[in-house]
Length: 202
Image 1 (cartoon, rainbow, N blue to C red):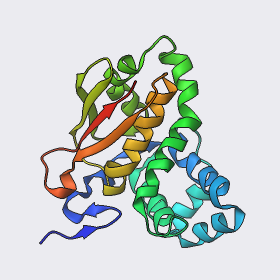
Image 2: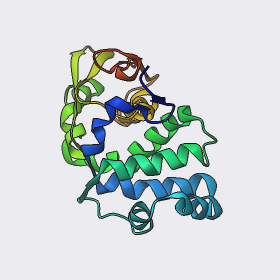
Image 3: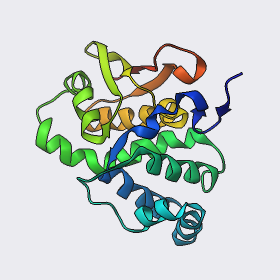
């Protein structure tokens, strides 16, 4: 039987270890912890990290630098197992909040005339601005709904199930959508051929 970690997912699917993430995502982590749980929680979390990851966590990454996805996943796992009380579902709010930190600036630059459908059709471009490795696509986009999939590659379980859903929810709301709902419907960690999501909005 394949080993499944409740946070990171299947041990045989950890190809994301070789991906890279933009510095802006790493810099958002200590900010979120401080805002949600305060200085004591931030210090306690910092102490749980490996020495190499602690250096990155304590010295905010420059927004346009690239870093190992392993570093991001270690920080997120420590957040889930620490201040989130072992509840990965809380990463949905986390993903939405992280999106709201950075996306308004991106929208002003690239999507200022866009509708929710316009944004979703270009979700692969936005993904590429934050991740090197894997790729997301929207094979079906209608006026008020869409089907999305991780076209290649894989993400940790917590990000597939909750983080991406939260991020997409906030992204759609920031583009003007109301009544947004985003859910993962298939996951590679559960044996599906690809991770897929449905999105709907008004």
